[in-house]
Amino acid sequence: MKRPTIDVRGFLDERERPAGVATTTSRGNPALAMMWFVAEEHRLWFHTPEARGRPAGM
Image 1 (cartoon, rainbow, N blue to C red):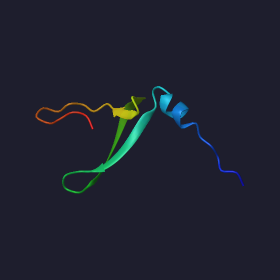
Image 2: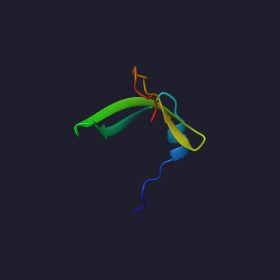
Image 3: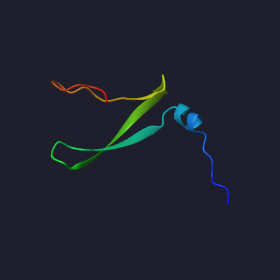
Image 4: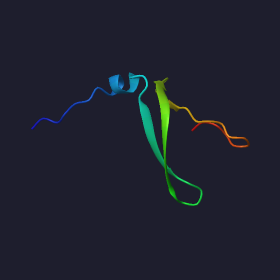
């Protein structure tokens, strides 16, 4: 049986596709954030709001 193939570059180049990013909080609780992203310069860039006194970005 053939494995399905996916066009990764085509998938990443689709505009308006949100990404689900899972992490844990400083207290160890699970957290899930939905963010917009763009694939450029061989990197994934995520939009993260800047909070006062905290760094922005990932």
